Length: 285
Image 1 (cartoon, rainbow, N blue to C red):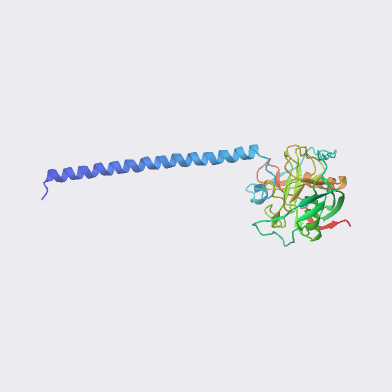
Image 2 (image 1 turned 90 degrees about the vertical axis):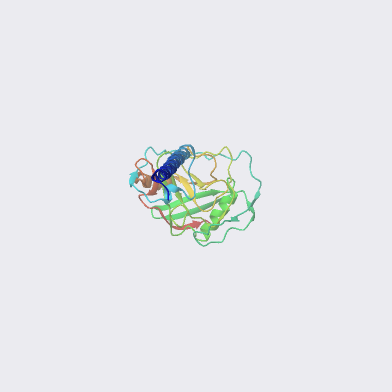
Protein backbone atom coordinates (compact mmCIF):
# COMPACT_ATOMS: atom_id res chain seq x y z
CA UNK A 1 0.00 0.00 0.00
CA UNK A 2 1.43 3.42 -0.96
CA UNK A 3 1.89 5.85 1.86
CA UNK A 4 0.19 9.24 1.98
CA UNK A 5 3.48 10.87 1.03
CA UNK A 6 3.82 8.60 -2.00
CA UNK A 7 0.23 9.34 -3.05
CA UNK A 8 0.82 13.06 -2.75
CA UNK A 9 4.02 12.78 -4.83
CA UNK A 10 2.21 10.78 -7.53
CA UNK A 11 -0.64 13.30 -7.63
CA UNK A 12 1.89 16.12 -7.90
CA UNK A 13 3.63 14.42 -10.84
CA UNK A 14 0.28 13.85 -12.56
CA UNK A 15 -0.69 17.48 -12.07
CA UNK A 16 2.65 18.61 -13.48
CA UNK A 17 2.17 16.38 -16.54
CA UNK A 18 -1.34 17.81 -17.07
CA UNK A 19 -0.01 21.38 -16.82
CA UNK A 20 2.71 20.69 -19.39
CA UNK A 21 0.15 19.07 -21.69
CA UNK A 22 -2.23 22.01 -21.36
CA UNK A 23 0.58 24.49 -21.99
CA UNK A 24 1.62 22.63 -25.14
CA UNK A 25 -1.99 22.56 -26.39
CA UNK A 26 -2.39 26.28 -25.70
CA UNK A 27 0.85 26.98 -27.55
CA UNK A 28 -0.33 24.95 -30.55
CA UNK A 29 -3.68 26.78 -30.58
CA UNK A 30 -1.86 30.14 -30.58
CA UNK A 31 0.36 29.03 -33.46
CA UNK A 32 -2.64 27.81 -35.46
CA UNK A 33 -4.49 31.08 -34.82
CA UNK A 34 -1.50 33.15 -35.94
CA UNK A 35 -0.97 31.06 -39.08
CA UNK A 36 -4.68 31.23 -39.94
CA UNK A 37 -4.68 35.00 -39.54
CA UNK A 38 -1.62 35.35 -41.76
CA UNK A 39 -3.20 33.15 -44.43
CA UNK A 40 -6.47 35.11 -44.40
CA UNK A 41 -4.65 38.43 -44.57
CA UNK A 42 -2.51 37.14 -47.43
CA UNK A 43 -5.54 35.93 -49.36
CA UNK A 44 -7.44 39.17 -48.87
CA UNK A 45 -4.39 41.24 -49.69
CA UNK A 46 -3.70 39.11 -52.75
CA UNK A 47 -7.27 39.56 -53.95
CA UNK A 48 -7.06 43.31 -53.54
CA UNK A 49 -3.70 43.38 -55.33
CA UNK A 50 -5.09 41.24 -58.17
CA UNK A 51 -8.08 43.50 -58.71
CA UNK A 52 -5.94 46.60 -58.51
CA UNK A 53 -3.22 45.46 -60.91
CA UNK A 54 -4.96 43.24 -63.46
CA UNK A 55 -7.08 44.05 -66.46
CA UNK A 56 -10.02 41.89 -65.39
CA UNK A 57 -12.33 41.58 -68.36
CA UNK A 58 -13.52 38.30 -69.78
CA UNK A 59 -15.50 35.12 -69.75
CA UNK A 60 -16.53 33.86 -66.33
CA UNK A 61 -16.14 37.26 -64.74
CA UNK A 62 -16.98 37.35 -61.01
CA UNK A 63 -18.74 40.69 -61.27
CA UNK A 64 -21.17 39.21 -63.75
CA UNK A 65 -21.79 35.92 -61.96
CA UNK A 66 -22.17 36.79 -58.26
CA UNK A 67 -25.44 37.89 -56.73
CA UNK A 68 -25.18 41.52 -55.62
CA UNK A 69 -25.12 41.91 -51.86
CA UNK A 70 -25.78 45.64 -51.96
CA UNK A 71 -27.60 46.79 -55.06
CA UNK A 72 -26.35 50.06 -56.50
CA UNK A 73 -27.12 51.64 -59.87
CA UNK A 74 -24.10 53.40 -61.35
CA UNK A 75 -24.59 55.47 -64.48
CA UNK A 76 -22.20 56.25 -67.32
CA UNK A 77 -20.91 59.79 -67.51
CA UNK A 78 -18.71 61.65 -70.01
CA UNK A 79 -19.22 59.17 -72.83
CA UNK A 80 -16.94 60.10 -75.77
CA UNK A 81 -18.71 60.84 -79.04
CA UNK A 82 -15.77 60.50 -81.46
CA UNK A 83 -15.33 57.09 -83.05
CA UNK A 84 -12.07 55.31 -82.29
CA UNK A 85 -9.68 54.74 -85.18
CA UNK A 86 -9.05 51.03 -85.50
CA UNK A 87 -5.31 50.27 -85.62
CA UNK A 88 -4.14 48.37 -88.66
CA UNK A 89 -1.94 45.33 -88.47
CA UNK A 90 1.75 46.21 -88.79
CA UNK A 91 1.95 43.60 -91.56
CA UNK A 92 -1.00 42.43 -93.61
CA UNK A 93 -2.06 38.80 -93.29
CA UNK A 94 -1.79 36.43 -96.25
CA UNK A 95 -4.95 35.97 -98.32
CA UNK A 96 -5.82 32.87 -96.30
CA UNK A 97 -4.93 31.76 -92.77
CA UNK A 98 -5.36 28.49 -90.92
CA UNK A 99 -7.99 28.49 -88.17
CA UNK A 100 -8.33 25.86 -85.45
CA UNK A 101 -11.23 25.49 -83.04
CA UNK A 102 -10.42 23.23 -80.10
CA UNK A 103 -13.05 21.39 -78.07
CA UNK A 104 -12.98 22.32 -74.38
CA UNK A 105 -13.78 20.44 -71.19
CA UNK A 106 -16.80 22.56 -70.35
CA UNK A 107 -20.06 21.75 -72.16
CA UNK A 108 -21.56 24.27 -74.55
CA UNK A 109 -23.98 26.74 -72.99
CA UNK A 110 -26.16 26.24 -76.07
CA UNK A 111 -26.07 23.52 -78.69
CA UNK A 112 -23.99 24.38 -81.75
CA UNK A 113 -21.61 22.98 -84.32
CA UNK A 114 -18.07 24.43 -84.15
CA UNK A 115 -16.58 25.89 -87.33
CA UNK A 116 -14.51 23.49 -89.41
CA UNK A 117 -10.76 23.69 -88.97
CA UNK A 118 -8.80 24.84 -91.99
CA UNK A 119 -8.04 27.86 -94.13
CA UNK A 120 -10.21 30.97 -94.03
CA UNK A 121 -10.02 34.15 -96.11
CA UNK A 122 -8.27 37.12 -94.49
CA UNK A 123 -9.81 39.77 -96.72
CA UNK A 124 -13.23 41.37 -97.03
CA UNK A 125 -15.95 42.41 -94.60
CA UNK A 126 -19.23 40.91 -93.39
CA UNK A 127 -22.27 42.82 -92.14
CA UNK A 128 -24.22 41.48 -89.15
CA UNK A 129 -27.35 42.99 -87.63
CA UNK A 130 -28.42 42.11 -84.11
CA UNK A 131 -32.13 42.60 -83.56
CA UNK A 132 -32.37 43.59 -79.89
CA UNK A 133 -34.81 44.96 -77.34
CA UNK A 134 -33.26 48.44 -77.79
CA UNK A 135 -33.34 48.31 -81.60
CA UNK A 136 -31.00 47.05 -84.31
CA UNK A 137 -27.27 47.00 -83.60
CA UNK A 138 -25.22 46.92 -86.79
CA UNK A 139 -21.74 45.39 -86.95
CA UNK A 140 -19.14 45.45 -89.70
CA UNK A 141 -16.84 42.42 -89.30
CA UNK A 142 -13.38 42.77 -90.84
CA UNK A 143 -11.50 39.60 -91.81
CA UNK A 144 -8.25 41.53 -92.26
CA UNK A 145 -8.28 42.23 -88.51
CA UNK A 146 -9.19 38.76 -87.21
CA UNK A 147 -10.23 36.20 -89.85
CA UNK A 148 -10.69 33.26 -87.47
CA UNK A 149 -12.78 35.37 -85.11
CA UNK A 150 -14.97 36.63 -87.93
CA UNK A 151 -15.47 33.09 -89.19
CA UNK A 152 -16.47 31.95 -85.70
CA UNK A 153 -18.92 34.81 -85.13
CA UNK A 154 -20.60 34.29 -88.50
CA UNK A 155 -20.85 30.55 -87.87
CA UNK A 156 -22.55 31.06 -84.51
CA UNK A 157 -24.88 33.77 -85.85
CA UNK A 158 -26.05 31.53 -88.71
CA UNK A 159 -26.86 28.79 -86.18
CA UNK A 160 -28.96 31.27 -84.16
CA UNK A 161 -26.62 30.80 -81.20
CA UNK A 162 -27.07 34.42 -80.12
CA UNK A 163 -30.85 34.42 -80.58
CA UNK A 164 -32.76 34.60 -77.32
CA UNK A 165 -29.74 35.68 -75.26
CA UNK A 166 -29.10 38.81 -73.20
CA UNK A 167 -26.13 41.12 -72.83
CA UNK A 168 -25.13 40.21 -69.28
CA UNK A 169 -22.57 42.89 -68.42
CA UNK A 170 -22.37 46.68 -68.62
CA UNK A 171 -19.32 48.57 -67.38
CA UNK A 172 -19.60 52.33 -66.88
CA UNK A 173 -16.51 53.12 -64.79
CA UNK A 174 -12.88 52.86 -65.90
CA UNK A 175 -13.90 51.29 -69.19
CA UNK A 176 -17.23 51.68 -70.96
CA UNK A 177 -18.31 48.43 -72.56
CA UNK A 178 -21.35 46.21 -73.10
CA UNK A 179 -20.63 42.47 -73.02
CA UNK A 180 -22.82 39.81 -74.66
CA UNK A 181 -22.66 36.32 -76.13
CA UNK A 182 -23.35 34.02 -73.17
CA UNK A 183 -26.61 32.08 -73.59
CA UNK A 184 -26.66 31.50 -69.81
CA UNK A 185 -26.69 35.24 -69.17
CA UNK A 186 -24.23 35.06 -66.26
CA UNK A 187 -20.87 35.51 -67.98
CA UNK A 188 -19.83 31.89 -67.41
CA UNK A 189 -20.94 30.21 -70.63
CA UNK A 190 -19.41 29.56 -74.03
CA UNK A 191 -19.82 27.40 -77.12
CA UNK A 192 -17.85 24.42 -75.77
CA UNK A 193 -14.70 25.15 -77.78
CA UNK A 194 -12.05 27.84 -78.01
CA UNK A 195 -9.64 29.38 -80.51
CA UNK A 196 -6.48 31.45 -80.47
CA UNK A 197 -6.18 35.19 -79.98
CA UNK A 198 -5.68 37.39 -83.02
CA UNK A 199 -3.91 40.28 -81.33
CA UNK A 200 -0.86 42.48 -81.83
CA UNK A 201 0.82 45.11 -79.65
CA UNK A 202 -0.54 48.06 -81.64
CA UNK A 203 -4.14 47.30 -80.65
CA UNK A 204 -6.02 50.04 -78.85
CA UNK A 205 -9.68 50.27 -77.86
CA UNK A 206 -12.29 53.00 -77.97
CA UNK A 207 -15.77 53.96 -79.09
CA UNK A 208 -17.12 51.70 -81.82
CA UNK A 209 -14.71 48.78 -81.33
CA UNK A 210 -16.09 45.21 -81.44
CA UNK A 211 -13.84 42.68 -79.70
CA UNK A 212 -13.79 39.23 -78.15
CA UNK A 213 -13.95 38.66 -74.40
CA UNK A 214 -11.81 35.91 -72.94
CA UNK A 215 -10.65 34.37 -69.67
CA UNK A 216 -6.97 34.28 -70.56
CA UNK A 217 -4.74 33.70 -73.58
CA UNK A 218 -6.36 31.75 -76.45
CA UNK A 219 -9.69 31.15 -74.68
CA UNK A 220 -11.99 32.89 -77.18
CA UNK A 221 -15.44 31.40 -77.56
CA UNK A 222 -18.74 33.23 -78.04
CA UNK A 223 -18.61 36.18 -75.66
CA UNK A 224 -17.87 39.57 -77.21
CA UNK A 225 -17.98 43.18 -76.13
CA UNK A 226 -18.82 46.55 -77.64
CA UNK A 227 -16.79 49.57 -76.55
CA UNK A 228 -19.38 52.36 -76.54
CA UNK A 229 -17.09 54.90 -74.85
CA UNK A 230 -13.76 54.83 -73.07
CA UNK A 231 -11.56 51.79 -73.65
CA UNK A 232 -8.13 53.27 -72.99
CA UNK A 233 -7.50 51.09 -69.92
CA UNK A 234 -7.88 47.85 -71.85
CA UNK A 235 -4.68 45.96 -72.61
CA UNK A 236 -3.96 44.67 -76.13
CA UNK A 237 -5.14 41.12 -75.44
CA UNK A 238 -8.66 41.12 -76.86
CA UNK A 239 -9.11 40.34 -80.54
CA UNK A 240 -10.70 43.24 -82.42
CA UNK A 241 -12.78 41.83 -85.25
CA UNK A 242 -14.99 44.69 -86.37
CA UNK A 243 -16.80 47.91 -85.63
CA UNK A 244 -20.24 49.09 -84.51
CA UNK A 245 -21.97 51.92 -86.38
CA UNK A 246 -22.70 55.29 -84.81
CA UNK A 247 -26.49 54.92 -84.65
CA UNK A 248 -26.15 51.64 -82.79
CA UNK A 249 -23.74 53.23 -80.32
CA UNK A 250 -26.24 55.97 -79.53
CA UNK A 251 -28.75 53.30 -78.50
CA UNK A 252 -26.17 51.73 -76.19
CA UNK A 253 -25.39 55.18 -74.78
CA UNK A 254 -28.97 55.44 -73.56
CA UNK A 255 -28.68 52.07 -71.82
CA UNK A 256 -25.42 53.17 -70.18
CA UNK A 257 -27.02 56.40 -68.96
CA UNK A 258 -29.76 54.45 -67.16
CA UNK A 259 -26.98 52.59 -65.41
CA UNK A 260 -25.60 49.22 -64.39
CA UNK A 261 -26.62 47.29 -61.28
CA UNK A 262 -23.40 46.90 -59.28
CA UNK A 263 -22.56 45.02 -56.10
CA UNK A 264 -21.19 48.13 -54.42
CA UNK A 265 -21.72 51.85 -54.97
CA UNK A 266 -19.21 53.20 -57.44
CA UNK A 267 -18.14 49.80 -58.74
CA UNK A 268 -19.77 50.53 -62.09
CA UNK A 269 -19.80 46.92 -63.29
CA UNK A 270 -22.81 44.60 -63.41
CA UNK A 271 -25.99 43.83 -65.31
CA UNK A 272 -27.49 46.70 -67.31
CA UNK A 273 -30.53 48.19 -65.61
CA UNK A 274 -32.17 48.46 -69.04
CA UNK A 275 -31.98 44.92 -70.49
CA UNK A 276 -30.38 44.42 -73.89
CA UNK A 277 -31.92 41.20 -75.17
CA UNK A 278 -30.75 39.77 -78.49
CA UNK A 279 -33.70 38.46 -80.49
CA UNK A 280 -31.88 37.65 -83.72
CA UNK A 281 -28.52 37.85 -85.48
CA UNK A 282 -28.75 38.32 -89.25
CA UNK A 283 -25.67 37.87 -91.44
CA UNK A 284 -25.75 39.90 -94.66
CA UNK A 285 -25.58 37.74 -97.76
